[in-house]
Amino acid sequence: MSTQSRQETADAPHWSAYGPLDLHPILVHTMEAFNEHGYHGTSVRDIAGRVGVTVPALYYHYENKQALLATLLETSMKDVLDRCRAAAAEAGDEPLPRFCAMVESIVLYMANRKGLAFLDTEIRSLEPGNRARYVALRDYLEHMLLDTVEAGIARGVFTTPIPADAVRAVLIMCQGVANWYRADGPLTAAQIAERHVLLSLGTVGHPGAVDGLAGIPSRRRTAPPRQRPNPEGRP
Amino acid sequence: MSTQSRQETADAPHWSAYGPLDLHPILVHTMEAFNEHGYHGTSVRDIAGRVGVTVPALYYHYENKQALLATLLETSMKDVLDRCRAAAAEAGDEPLPRFCAMVESIVLYMANRKGLAFLDTEIRSLEPGNRARYVALRDYLEHMLLDTVEAGIARGVFTTPIPADAVRAVLIMCQGVANWYRADGPLTAAQIAERHVLLSLGTVGHPGAVDGLAGIPSRRRTAPPRQRPNPEGRP
Image (cartoon, rainbow over all chains, first blue to last red; front, side, top):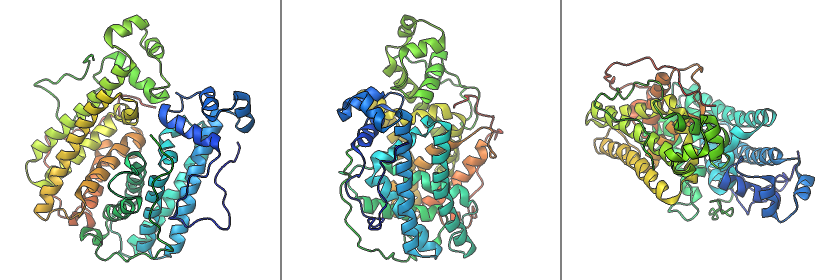
């Protein structure tokens, strides 16, 4: 499988910063085609036509349509995972700010990279090996969040008696943002992320959430940028 | 559009009871094909082949592939709406038990009718008129839940400062059950519904949710049946 994915460099942007989508044009056109017509409704010929290359030229870069889907989904999951880990590291070990930062980073991703994040609906189209690799990354994200919630329960910060269910629900509501977020909607990505932090705190049973953010420490951020409109133009 | 949908009769089953899926075989095969290959990846010829009829015979029943999708989605949304209204009516006007019953009914639907509920991912494939009709039904469900949450806020039962966001998040986490529920998994549909009631109470800021169901009135149920395994056999 080719690796035209986002470069991880020493000067990677802050986890909350989003520039234009940095993907090979073949992947951008493939993402758009999959989002419009689904994986099974898109042919390699369709993609080649969008890119403006011949089918053989496309095969020079990617073995087949499955490799394109797997590359897109893995690129996306690795990016959200990297950002979530950076957010957690920046927040430190205290479960409450750590949980808040992780949720914020995930929601910012779903809003700012909704074209990639929306492809999550095509996991069913991954072949077993690719699917296993993708699910392993997704499970890693889920366990990172679950570890934090369980640490919070141990310290009495969170009170849910069903932490695994709560974490799954939180991830599903965050993922849902990729479906409904519109760059021209009434709320910015940053505002939606902030609201999901509050909702998620309620879901994991943080007493402060019931009082509407009372007791939630303000989170330090390096350079809190105004979120740019989503540059992907997903349908 | 044809209306091979579930008959609404005077002896409709209790909102929490699920028998085998009562759909015309054409719709069952169409649902399975859409779930496996997506709307755009399925042809009318594929569906006719699954049903074991000719393409003209299929067109005798349904105008086209779009009519099949619209019928399936509307049938599904009307069923969940009917069950949710019945659950709310049975629970009465008190916001707390009413909210709990509505969430329970929605989650039971997502688990027991996951083959239909999963088609929600194909809303993007609906043509404008069909989409508008479907979205109107979905909005009705959302408003029913929001009215209850706002009534609860007025009485101090729920405390979320962002009720519309909270209701959307609750519906997204309930809808998510259709993606991950397995009839052979460790929890029954009824147990998953019960857990989602607790998670949802946290999301809308019910103080009792923080204490793990303390303060939540036990819900009366007419004939609480053990949920049967999902008879649809969705992929």
